[in-house]
Image 1 (tube, one colour):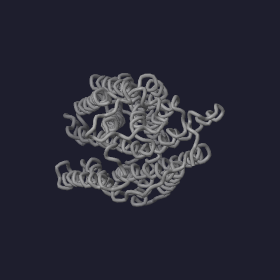
Image 2 (cartoon, helix red, strand yellow; image 1 turned 180 degrees about the horizontal axis):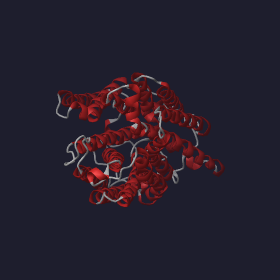
Image 3 (cartoon, helix red, strand yellow; image 1 turned 180 degrees about the vertical axis):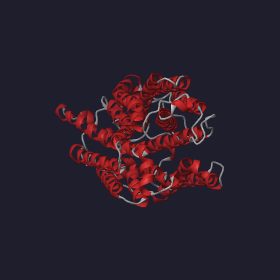
Image 4 (cartoon, rainbow, N blue to C red; image 1 turned 60 degrees about the vertical axis):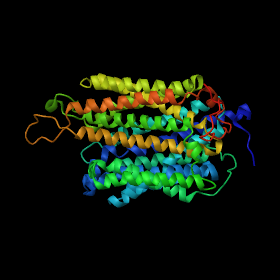
Length: 504
């Protein structure tokens, strides 16, 4: 059963492309909100559930681990068995997880709800696969950029919305999950009604062993990254988990090289454009969470005690200092799509790295004035959006049609891993040195130099992203985005030279 390609459809049917893009953007935005939804309310959860800070940290860790396990598996499942049915299924899981979290009165059930929310992270790579099927090549870069741009927008919007919802004398963290439930239902209805069923799925067997070994690798990698501060970075659990990740990664590679229908084609995984896109995604994800964690913490520092900071509440920190960069990230997404279509993704990724490095460099030099912190945040927000707009174009233009879901799933995990590393690094750096000369009885607060170092590390991550994109993506340009809707040739084996079909 075949379908007419997007480019060959009648002009009247092309108006439907807009509603498809809107529906998928909404679904992606809701998914991205799940990552930062709980950040402003961890303290409320700890008090309400009578838990320790270490126990409550699993509310964020569980979501990240669930995303790592299910995103590549469900991305591949969607490629094989139908993208829209898989999308609808994942949205139903998100609704169930959000509803469970909103009604849970124990930490255990709350964590189960967060696991279900994390599993729905697979919606993003599936959305990009649907775009590749349904959108004309001329419009595809802009569509992917807009859907990708909602990732950065959603993460910031979640913090602002939760800050607003939990104001007052008797705040209830469950209102955040009721918000998530409502948005998830809206996204589900939009996808069911507005997204076409898509082309006939090719089918195929599921690589269960490959999925399990990849899941073990990602869990053993991300678990110590998220729990390292609690466990100790040199503890046996931390070092043992990292060692286990290396072992399972080697096992996973061997499994994928031998099975007939692997979860991840190793030739695709090490294909230079895909590999460098994943590295770049990790670095951009690092920078995005360095902005959220670093600026939010800086804004809440008491200036009368430290000589720096802005005495902001959680709400003011979100609205005044983070919301502007969030809005700019959304506004920059369509521009990123236009630039990708005109220049190709490589120059846009380099530009994103340069702008992000400049923003964090400015923040490191001057973070005592609100205007500087906000202005620098605008640059970083634009950089994240441009980076996220470019990465799908690299991936989609570099893999065959039937590998779109899994390739974007791996790239999504790379970004999530970068975000986890960014959060862990900034948290560790801020805790590594306390301010001197604090009054007796005052809580330990970070020395100003720790914020400077955090922002410099984030600047270095963006600068490295620019270098990786510039040096590693030399063969990605306009050709890859223009023909992105057609099946791309399979990546060449590592022992053969790359074809010049995507020169830019």
